[in-house]
Length: 88
Image 1: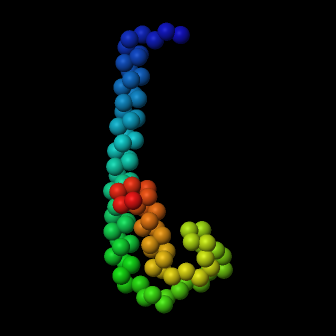
Image 2 (image 1 turned 45 degrees about the vertical axis):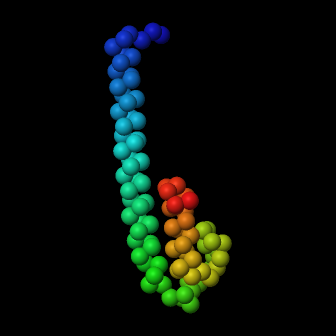
Image 3 (image 1 turned 180 degrees about the horizontal axis):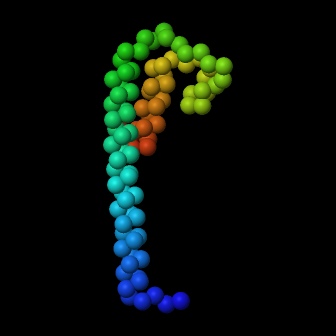
């Protein structure tokens, strides 16, 4: 199966558009993660250190049944930092 020059150029343009869309989505996701991290950092200072959340199961992020919101917020901020790679 041979491609004509026109069909090859059309395929290249389609691939270029897909890459551009993926990059735009990546930038949007990165921006949303940065905003989420900022909100979590602001909420962290209002958490009382003795406040504990009891669950009937181990939390998937910390493997604890009783966890403090501060620890949960810190764990989420650490995950976001790892994903973004800007505060390693």
